[in-house]
Length: 152
Image (cartoon, rainbow, N blue to C red; front, top):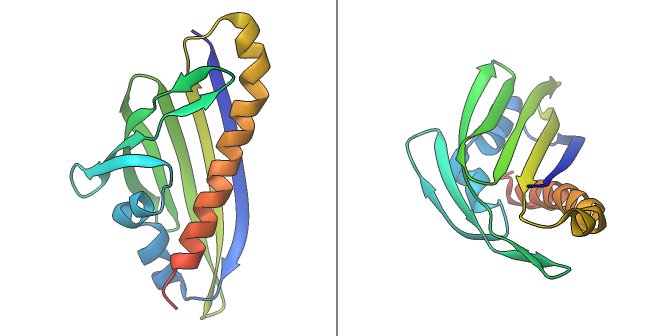
């Protein structure tokens, strides 16, 4: 089964202290609320979320993504996630926090995503770039929603 891969990385500064940035950008429920394109999400413990995506169709192929992600701080400044259960979608990444003075925080957000779809090789070649762009677009739009929802 063909595998499609997409990556997205963005660095930006928010006008809140590092503690407030971590409280917002490292909160699984906040992340799930602003994920986008979800049929539903369910919290499965303090640090684990199960996601069911809205089906996406492109060139006659429909992708039904569903996965469970675990979130955790790997050190004082890095919040990471990884897929722990799935049939067809793997996501991993991190949010790194760096204080910029007392009132601002630099955030570097990185995501790697892979998904499998049952398509023939010809169609896989046609939609490979589309899927990669959609993954990047999804990351960019997610961060925009997260920044817009950041309490000041």
